Image 1 (cartoon, rainbow, N blue to C red):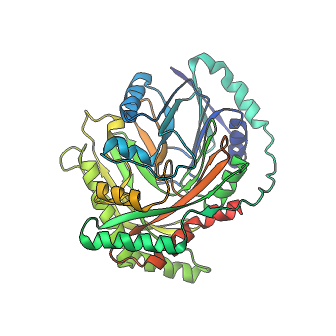
Image 2: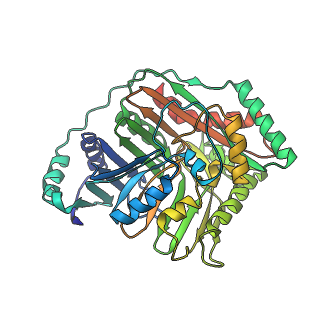
Image 3: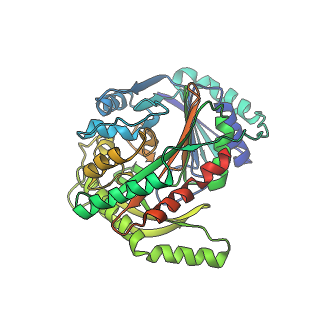
Length: 428
């Protein structure tokens, strides 16, 4: 169904910029970038999909069923996203909060052209009917002139809730925890702007350069844009193994090496941050067990500190061996939304957050990723991201933190501002 051809490039970073510049000529584009971050689960350095041979765009309650049929029918690469509010299709839940951006609930494409970078090797995977375009495209991409990016006009973002309202909502969450309704919840707040004429690619490049995260993504589906600097993997299937890597626990980077090491050690030993992470590990273990072979769910790493340009994070790695009858979409549906963005117990936490939060999360707390023809897949967590609708000229970004019985509302608010730092810097 696809023709594969490989080439080598001398300057990978320069080619990557040329590749993204070329991709802007398409109405559909997904660019996934590890920023040279490699671990035992890595499959590539960067991956680009452009053009749409077919597409699935839906807001219906049967979104996962449609995606399952689409994936099984095409038996091809698919790229796209899942919004957080697909939770309403999985559980008896609803969303009635303000939605600034109106992204479709689920949107996937079967791309015309796929280009993968690994080291200096560039692989092209084109549909048979356009395979003769591979060499022409490769030469054309290499000749792309990458414009020096002019500065964006400063965009004034408005917090939807004040600090006082945020603190009151966290205090209400703490009451639910004290009553035993939940024992952890991810409470989120958003910042928004209207009448914005954004330059999505230059904004993404700046956001990515500030953070250089391992799950970065630039997505453009018609008017819908996601500029994502996420450090977090939601779910990956690699061969027989299913991998989840939730993040819970955050500390800022230090001003010098000594302070940075001290903050890292403090995070690793912080009982509140560790308890946040361990609660979500338990939730993920439970989610994976729904589709796992007996006794195959394992915690491979617990509360390991990973350092990124902006923050230190506690990350755990949980794996399982799925049952043969579980489809790729089954594995996603049985674990969605990811526990790190909900709280525990999952359904109760989502119900309570829906009442306390002031906005519809949409793609924030959702996921962008891809399916391979063999059923392997990889999806990130949409955090540290700017979301933009170029038709309505509306923009937003959101941040959140885990609330537990040990939470201090003022400190949780400060944590949110730390997480928002990169997006704010890029836009202002």
